[in-house]
Amino acid sequence: DQTDAMVGIERRGAACQNWPPGNAIGEVRDRQHAKGLRLVFPQNKGALLNRRWTFAQGSLRAASIVILCSGDPTMERTFSIIKPDATERNLTGAVNKVFEDGGLRIVAQRRIRMTEEQAKRFYEVHAERPFYGELVEFMTSGPVVVQVLEGEDAVAKHRELMGATNPAEAADGTVRKLYARSIGENSCHGSDSEENAAIEIAQFFSLADIVG
Image: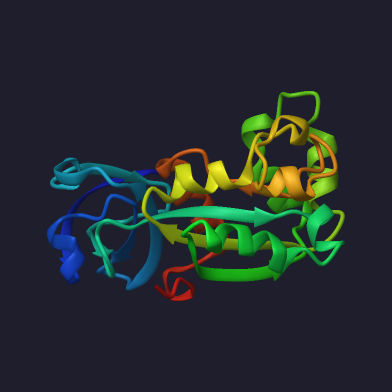
């Protein structure tokens, strides 16, 4: 059952004074039952205040959102995956050198074997596309490296450093020009917006995992 709960906002950390332009991750707690519930949302300044949220978590009577902000408020975060075709060739370090040399910093990282359920959820936006099954199969075919990158305009900068999806069209020096095998095996994924970065980060990392 869905229950509406009026939530309040508590901002912690110096960076909260200016609201970071990147992704804010809220922690929602049921005061009555002391159960934790994570809520992810993009930066939306004052629109978050006194807003009514709907939770599909049973009877949530009263809750508060705590926005934990730290670091430089001009920084932005994005989500990155180094795909199986790259990990198979031991290219994790080489790929991340392109990102780091381009001004991005790794603030969270994990090497995993993505399950079919995880891959389907991650790419559910493509569920009706003819390549969906093949994409899920590829992403579960070997280890991947999931990571959070931080920097100024991190979403746009990361996508610039990745290069065009078709490696034949990618700019010189980009990851896909250097390492991608094909349009399908293109070595890396990057969030296409701040909003999607927040959603994608939350699928694989908790607040405690992100060390700025």
